[in-house]
Length: 86
Image (cartoon, rainbow, N blue to C red; front, side):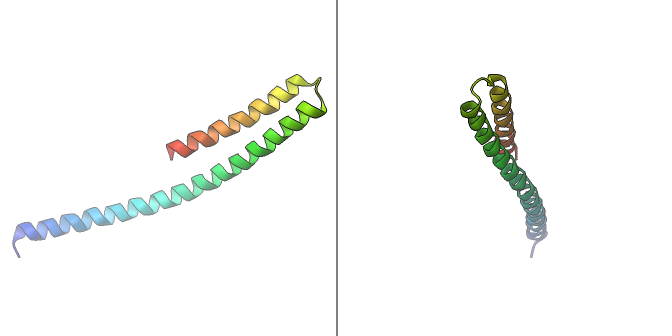
């Protein structure tokens, strides 16, 4: 084997080992992000349901309806940002 071939094999092995560790790190991060997204989605659905109940059960409480509704939307926007950032 020539020195160039050996250098190429070593460079490929180093690049491959770095890729594996980066993939492992991404899997760990994506697992945590998926859990956070799931929790945020459940909270959004509960908030949306609460806003609907407030809207129909207490029509005079518009401020409460908007507060709960916008809070639920804020949770959804956070989840949306996590989906595209990670």
